[in-house]
Length: 584
Image: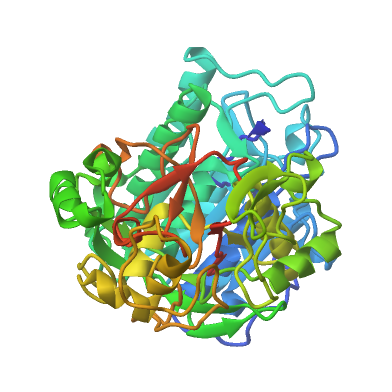
């Protein structure tokens, strides 16, 4: 599933050449410039997967952070204009041209993803037409340094993500920390001129990993996340170069160590200058609408970045005492502590409603998809009105039939976590934007909408009938053995989406109707070690997180802090989901 990039991305140096005839603005202000180079396809070397994706995503992010569109130059394999494909000739021309236009006070960012070589005491960048045994077909990094030194820009940043490997097919030879890698380290570190900051993905002799789940190199994934706001450590709405470098470096080390049991140690040259730099990348998404409607009629609300206290504000024993009438059990609340600060660093769109039967039907019909209860022939759970009992799993029950009335406007139920993820992947392909399940932290942040009370509308259990479809008086009239609240919401089973009062973010049914799948694995002690910034749950587990409670939940299970869990293959008449759309 995961592969490493047999790249060798490194500080960019290039041969001095004549000016070329690329299209450039007639006049430019003193501002920021970017030259982005991503090479996946090679004539001789092993092809790579995500270098072009790295640089395409970086181009989008830089434009959103304030880089003028006409001053972001992208060279990659899929360029429709042949002048922007990453050949040796094109790369050299582009560097020479852009650096010739830069003025005093400007900022230059030069980023490269692709193979590289080190031999004869020199480092080389590999264009896609490189002949690996012929240095004349490569780009000498020392010449790029020379161009940058002569460039009048006040800040010059090199961003590099690459292995230190032999990129020839079958080579894949990591350099050892001896003669060759030592020379390489000197060329990358000691030789970096003052005024140039280099952010490099790994140390000599190490692999820079690519990851299919990210669709990027691991290092570049965290660079991109950092630029979107995850690196904004002081919450000032911008990301400094120091914050970006340290965020990407730390998270790359931790992720690679956990996922691959391997070492990847990014490093920074001229790091001592970072904190003194005044340059910052702005975050957010200029022009992002507060409310959007997607191609299947789903409404999504923009949830801003921010901080909140996650978890229960009262002990498990106090929860048990307050909800004793509903037979609350303190042991089931042990995972809600300790209460801890969480920072959501990136805005995201969240479904205003849970995914409905009608929306899920569009997916099934379009993709020809069979849900797990259908494909494994085990079926799901349902209500047998004739025998007045819940039963299952039984093949007669699935998302189409739960034993009670479900119109296209009701939330879909009897879908597994895997089915919910399949829906998100289909919708992502349909719209060419990323959809996914919310993390548990995103879900609670969105549910609370700035509140610290037990429910987003206060602490009174009886008030829940105003904001959600819960185990209430209507439900209790049918199920006399239950201990519901006395207030009536008018529904026994699921209610059509959006029938109750929304929270301050404009989200409906965050309490009740159906439990909602989250992306995280469940860890009962995860809060003890959860990171402050954008936590996404344990790396593995047996259960996925469920949040929000449902139409048959008592007040204890409807609290904003309440955590539930279930196997990814489970299917129930009280479980559905809502989706996140990633803000690009």
